[in-house]
Structure formats: C-alpha cells, structure tokens
Image (tube, rainbow, N blue to C red; front, side, top):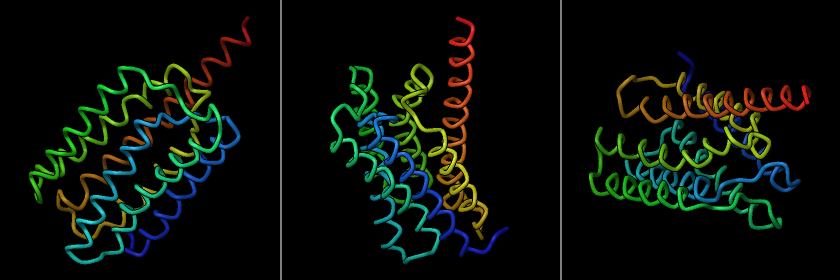
Length: 198
C-alpha cells in the first residue's frame, strides 16, 4: 500500500494524460466525442464537491483531476475547427441514460447505491468513445488513456481503508482507462497491418 501522498502523483499523471489528449486535439490528431468528455467532466466535479463537504482528503485530488482533465479537452474541442467527433443519435441515447444515472446518483445521496449510479453514469458516457476507439482508433490517444490508467492505479494503491466507497470508483477508472488504451492500441495495430497488406 502506498502513502496517501501518492494520490498527488496519480492526479498529476491523470492531468498529464489529458494534456496529451488536448495537444492531439489541437493538432487535429484526436477528435473527442463531446458527449463523453462533457459527462466525464461533470460527474467528477459533483463528486469532488460532495467529498469536500465531508472534509478534504488528499485522495480527493484524483477525483478533481478526473473532472479537470476532461473539461480541458472539451474546451479544446471548441477551439479547432473539426477537432471533434460528429455526434450521432446513439451518442445522445447514451448521454440521456448517463444523465438519468447521474440524477439517480444525486437523488440517492451518500452510500453504496449512489456510487453504483455514479459508475453507471460514467460508463454510459464512455460507450460512444469506446465504440469510436474500436471503429476509428486513429481519432483517439492511447497515451492519454494509458496515463489515466497509471494515474488512477497509483491513486487506488494509495487507498488506506479498503471500503467500497474508497475503492469502487477508482477501481472502475483503472479498468476503464486500461481497457480503452488497449482497444486503441490493438485496433491501430490491426488497421496498420491491414493497410500494409494492401
């Protein structure tokens, strides 16, 4: 188990990953899905506010970085023409379900059920980006999600008390970031191999 202070390092790595994605967005390499990145910024900010009402802990920096990074990427998508992914009806369905889960999270208040709804909201927000990572991996940044995987892993390992509220959301973020990074990397490899065989 790491010192709680390692949560600071994890937060900085998370932000560095989002800055890498932001840079790729400004260069036109990455095209963020605004549905995913909007919701990814909202939920952590709400959670961070809720954490502050219970007293600041250094692990709260992981939650703050999980909202701040996506907010920066979202802002960057508005500064460069065509630096975003065209939103389709499927994306709106996922957004509506995510907002519903987020609303249920807020209504339920504290407790394990609220955490489950927050994870559901985040996962539903992820579906459009996960699908895009599979079909168009060239529009995503494996390094950004890889950094998210490393940062949230460090944050998770700095957990001192292994109760569901302390580890559930960070553990989910480890799986999510690692999974998307793997999808992007593998699909880019498959596509480049297919192009080489043409």
